[in-house]
Amino acid sequence: MTDLFSKFDPLIETREQLLATGLTDPFNLVMERVVSPTVAICNGRETVLLGTYNYMGMTFDQDVIAAGKQALDEYGSGTTGSRVLNGTYAGHKACEEALKDFYAMDHAMVFSTGYQANLGIISTIAGKDDYIVLDIDSHASIYDGCALGNANIVPFRHNDIDALEKRLKRLPEGAGVLVVLEGVYSMLGDIAPLKEMVAVSKAHGAMVLVDEAHSMGFIGEHGRGVAEAQGCIDDVDFIIGTFSKSVGTVGGFCVSNHPKFEIMRLVCRPYVFTASLPPSVVATAATSIRKLMHGADKRAHLWENSKKLHAGLKALGFQLGTDEPQSAIIAVIMPDLEKGAAMWEALLHEGLYVNLARPPATPANMTLLRCSLCAEHSSEQVDQILGMFEAAGRATGCIG
Image (cartoon, rainbow, N blue to C red):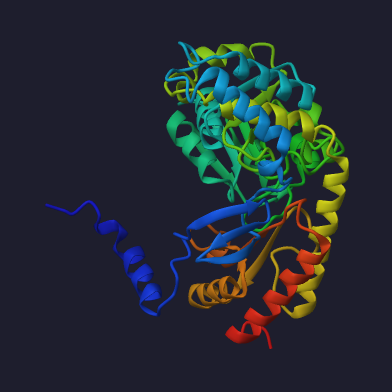
């Protein structure tokens, strides 16, 4: 009988080879204590955090923490139920109201994770005889949503407007079509040409869903994401987002102006058949979202951090994922996994945590050190980070 784990043997072998060199396991780092949005204790030493997606630094905001504590005291630790049964508390509705106000949209639906938001909305909207046209570099949750709904998947080359249009032209006339895009792509930190892509999609009668997980709170005048920044948010049918990035907690959501959207609460399986978020979580999320509505100064500082780190790493001789900073994500491209892992550990020894990203999660089989800046990083911390990269880069031979 076949061992069902045998398909993982190549990955097991790669991992064992890396660990045999004495490398710290980069995918099982334990943070013993978190001091602030930008600092934690890892392996007994103070470590600067540059890989947490905590873009707006809301995890230690005093108002956010107070709201969570109050909800914990008043409503207990969990709902023990689905949103369509006993799992909707006043806090869930307040969180959805905050989202509607933040996006200036008619409908908002909160999920237990961002992954479930994509899984649920995509699989429910587009079914067996429908078509989903999506960027080939789309997040795993988007692909999984396509698979769950059993729709026909039509990928196109990353950020290629012409390739999108060619795919749309080939679809059967009268077919149901959903185009799925992302505002910021999480591996390289590059943004999509949403304005042009949304226009092309609408010209071919498609509905459009944009995942703004890595741009919500930061990009756009009001922090509504790339669609807002590019002036096409009113033409987008569905925006998906998460609470685990700029909002600073956990959960996911979809906002929409579609007049029939509320029926999703009864037909979306990942919403109907899972427990709702704990009261303390939705209280922290709602408070954070409302504060992000007034986060212009933090957004401006985060842009300064991004520009400074990008320019500094480029000057040191590192190869980066984008020519110019486009988001709060800056990807440093490594020659291979072995060198990337060595650089990751050298940075950790310097007192810096980043993400080591490897195939198949990365585009074009790249190994990346992925940096996620935070609005709470000081300018001095960015200088410190550049010094750590220089020391680790020279120690590992990644830069001359």
